[in-house]
Image (tube, rainbow, N blue to C red):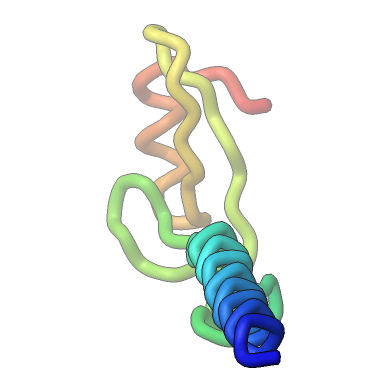
Length: 91
């Protein structure tokens, strides 16, 4: 009868160790997952709008222009004449 108890104890210890290994693997695989709600709450939405590419002041409405090298810039109402003098094309 003592051998039966020894087998039961060894099986119980093996089951506990197996459970610990499975739980550790599951925890390790989910470390890099970030809930989308946590990320969206971290950065509040900008209420002032985007910044002008030339003067860096926030503006509610920007007009986008293409430079000669193909880059896109967003300009406020005050900086639009600068874009026209540089022969930028509006998008």
